[in-house]
Image (cartoon, rainbow, N blue to C red; front, side, top):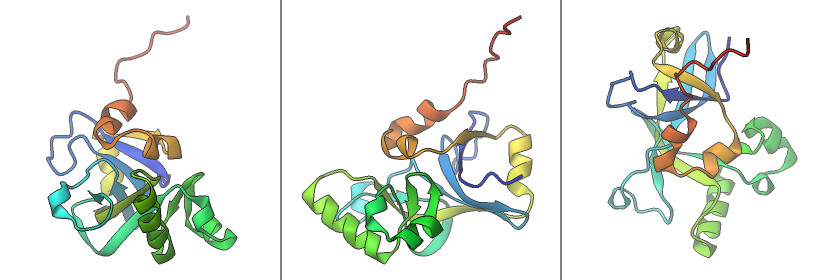
Length: 168
């Protein structure tokens, strides 16, 4: 079963400092492995020279920057269908980066995240970690991605591990 287009949230038992308290949006998940972006690790301002914040998308090096955004108006109809992860979350291209640069110059906030790096798993690796309880699965929404601050995202999205009382 694919978990693409969902958040995986590091459970408190996951002590690996690379992934401790991370929220990852899975972009791809199939028999060949998984690929996602950490969405709650902004880099310190001195680590980037862009006109907007840069996030550490994961420990694997990427060739360039990766972008997630919530601006349907930045894309044509075909691109919207091809690059939409879930309703209201899109993978950006070069034109979207130009739009983000302009938007950030006009106002200090926007519904976009620029990433360097990504998180990747080999065949069966993520499934094994999920079955061991390292990750919680949560439905990805544009509201959760863009409206919850990076520092609050993990605590806000982590499901409770306390069993709920039965209705019986």
